[in-house]
Image 1: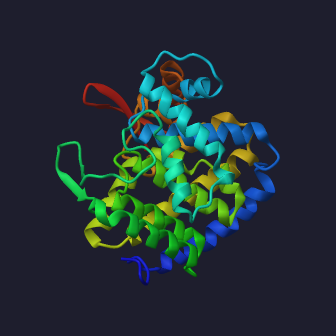
Image 2: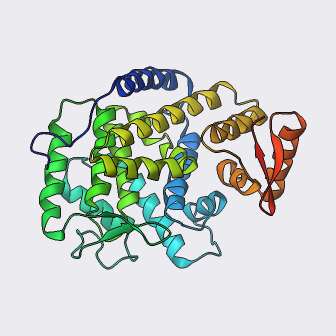
Length: 323
């Protein structure tokens, strides 16, 4: 499958995104202070872990994830707590992993899924299909006998290709999901390895919570995967992921440039969300801002009072949209 390169096109839009991201990385390095601020790095890492696990239906909120990482007791399903502990451990090992090593990939999976699945730290031994919420088969993973060879070819192509790392990392992420090499944990490992590859290009990506943008735009994330599956090439997924990386960098810059105005930062996050969704609910605000339901209600009411949002009925609940 990867004797030459995985199937994708480098479009004008992709090249423009790469150029913008490269410029934004320089801006973040100059203004965001990620390298010199251990507290901010830790906060962003916890956001990354929370978001990547939340995509996979982990029930812990950001405060609970933070508490688990800090060694505090949390009343939650043991499986969800174990997922947080495992994910934090492997993210903390990021600078020790070789992104082109099959052994390191399997070791990372072993840590990520330790105590959670039978086939931990090894490729799956049975065929698997990816289904949607209605039980429809969206994608059939590669047959088990082919997985080791396909994964080695993918790792080798990623190491040796002359493509920009921004593009290669997106391709690797997509192709891993396509092969679906593990019985469980493919999404978590795909996002982890994407971050690891980006960190090889610019170390700042070790502390940039791109996963939180994917979580905010989860429907788009899966739609990009499904569209690429239908097209039999990863161009659509590359375009989506580059837009998510760009958004993460822009938010890091805005946070650094306006730390004294939390209200404006909250509005920016809500506005960004509404650029990709028709409306926002109290529950959505709780998730993207990590605030309580009562605080989310006050934020939305205030924005509606300022005329920035319009309140309307959505089923049995209230929702808000841009004017």
